[in-house]
Length: 342
Image (tube, rainbow, N blue to C red; front, side, top):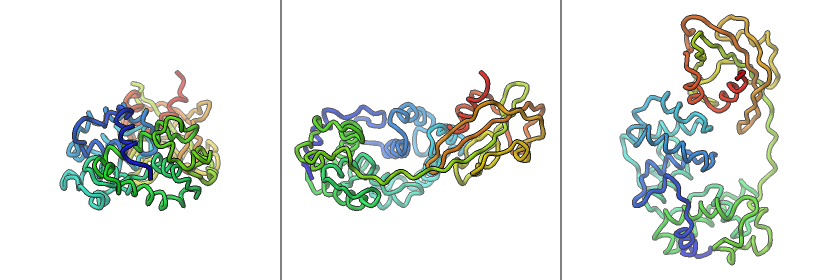
């Protein structure tokens, strides 16, 4: 593996200024929170949301005390909502036990997997371990010209990455070294058009020497995502509030607020067959257009019906002001709201 001190010198000059990278000793709660937020979500999206989340839940004890409804509201729009449920469950354990300072102990916390445990251990506690995320996989695959497609290549890439921690420079600064790997993958060794001429390790990169850097890591063709369909019911009261309900705690969008509707199925819905799923009997009017949202394993198309309602919310439902609803609803539901006339 190329010398760790070369990457560390580059990192000292070019490191990204990110809100979770403070001066001095890293706070394990902040490292953990940032790593969970960054899974499947871009730095540009996470940056402002991280600060907002931290202002509301400044430490692990505050997060543990908070009711799930507040956590869900703060996470809304970030996607992959199982992350928020796991974060909340893990906080309740960590508030009692404190943060373990080794990988195995961190792995025992609910919702903390191999990557997150290694990242927190290295960055917050100086454990000599390399977390394997997409950036690190890409850097390692290119440096070593590993042509085995993912995910089959993961064990080989992981073993190669850990070799860096045999080097004294990496062992002396494991947190900085792994963050240097993250930054190299995000800024230089990018998925498309890598800036090989600016890479501190370009002279030792086997893929760059062979002219195949942009083709690595190899990935299988993307699987076809099937289409599903749903019909949703947006009720408003005289004050303009929206009628919402909370989804069951398990499953897709578990525990999040939603605009009530039908299950999501493989065939479009006819209006008449949707009415048993309405929150109350009314003359529901269909709005033009449809909302589309992509989940990991399927594409979703949703239509929206509207009606007015007087009186209290039916059992299991609650009224919410439109602005509060936009903050609390997950992205898929916000796209339904966009179908409403301005």
